[in-house]
Length: 267
Length: 98
Image (cartoon, rainbow over all chains, first blue to last red; front, side, top):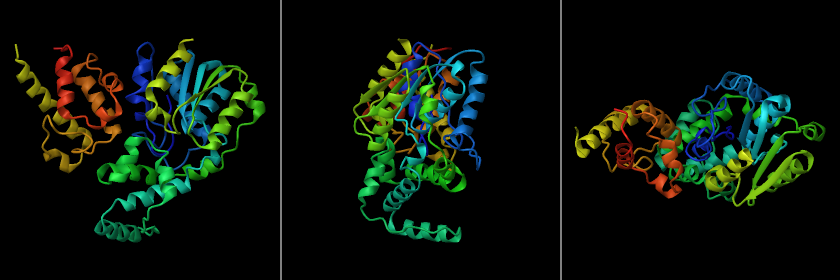
């Protein structure tokens, strides 16, 4: 099972869909390069690099067997790339809220700025002054004002409830969540790698014969809905399912999602 | 043969120690942890730390203590309000590996 970018980690699945599926299957979840407790090297965040990490894991955990893959967002694009490169090792593919082309996913620079604004907004004036000093010393520019911002709400709206309330409440969890995001964005090439990522061609998609379940939220971003419809049209053996929710389906709609995935994997 | 109360007190000590290890930070080493302590509000624990705690629980108490499975059955509100006491009660209610 693969998670999404920036604030995702194996916890996306660990307390929800993972155990549900593990009732009658062997389930592996991992933290992608740069996320959770996995290492955070400065480079290697292209989809191909992440898919190579996955290939190494699959070779180690299930040598000679077929695996089914479940991915959310960035994780879904990685799973897809792996499946396209190694179709003979893949049983079934579940892509939850997969964005294609990933470079168009409006999450990188804008989201980081908005989350930062939200984070600063949760600090007391004195904490903001300290933050300003620290960042100035580190030679970083800063956005010190944090007005109520409609785009901030849009970005916060993309996060699962737990993370959103933690960021809004401030404190240790907000700091750690923010540090995770900021560290990835500023100390690695993830932004550049993802922005440079080309689309996957229809020709390549239409050659993939394996069974695919595509799941999207009824209230997700339009670009994602379009991707869902495109993938459903181009992949020869795909089924498109809609669940009530936004991009944060694995948290918001954990039960229905788990049931849908379980049913698909068992069918 | 331990009484239920004794077992719970023991489990509370062990789980508190595991929580301190998982958080790792200096403030956590002296922070009071009781049955009423809440993970989200009092300890400000992140889900990724809950994963680490979950692994320690399995190591210590065995596979009968299925912490992820237990959380998977809870509503979001319940998870947000989770207390150390609830975890202790859950562990005490699982068949012991001892």
